[in-house]
Length: 286
Image (cartoon, rainbow, N blue to C red; front, side, top):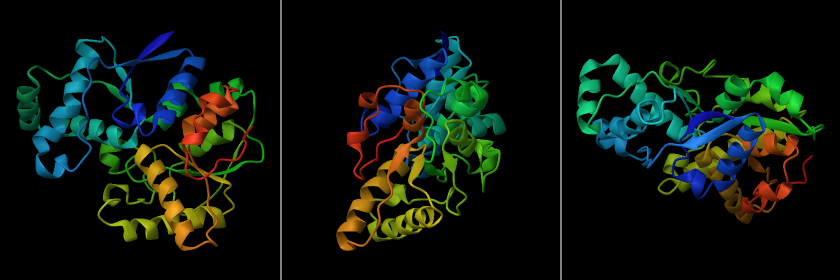
């Protein structure tokens, strides 16, 4: 079993537990053990980066330092798109600015080796495991399931930080979905922001954004939307309940994690998917 460092962040042991559990379970099928960073702390994905940029960089940098120095590993899986953004931002700012590196290392209390490969959920499947390997392990193809791959804004932007293959119309998640036997749909909102960071203070704006995102996916024929971000998933999932309450004619679309779809296609037990944690009911899959 090959070990990869693993940073679950606050969501994957709590509100998005189903994402964390299916990510770990599917990685194990392909011979990878996701080993949690010891005594990890929050990555600071709040408003911290707009208030104290040094602290915002130091929080993920402290975790990055542990990967090489303490765990003796060079790759970390960070499934949450928001956590991934903070890790990649810290790496980028330290690599680009010697003074930032010096300041961060002073806060962290030791040198930080930023030569660490950071993988989000899509990267883990596409780059680390590989589409061919996934296709070979599929036991319950998702045949006939039309899926809208939703990347949100943090997986791809800003591209100089995320190093995304295409910040406007990425296709790596689509290719993973196709390997599962599903049919990725072509749609217009795959990288649009859902407004999750303003979900508490700008609720009307969030609902408008979600109407556009979910509505376009449905218009383009999607049965389901696949997400790779806990914040996006919970925002798109729960807000549809509010929209439906105000407009009974609203046709809901289930919002699931990419890792849940991979787990389903690999034939893992349905009881381990966490389907009951979703607000919008998920149809029987596989």
